[in-house]
Length: 92
Image 1 (tube, helix red, strand yellow):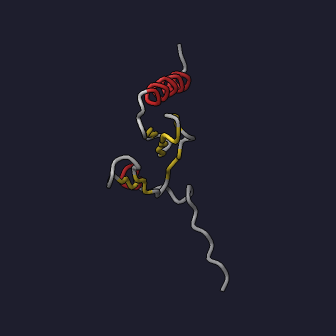
Image 2: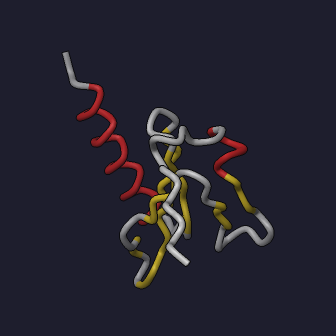
């Protein structure tokens, strides 16, 4: 039986290479379990740079589709407080 993780990684590599080959300027990978979105963008010579990873209360804007914006709270809901603890107020 194949591991789901290794199958997903292989699938990701195949798709990334295919999208890169055909010049897809930007693609988004949504990971609902982790409540994250990874975005790969073409940087030069039809190659993707390192993925930008978004989570929590980020608002993401596409660099390809003008006006397309996603608020992660609307997708995944608010993050639990233990994930993003409130910072202590600085002493005055």
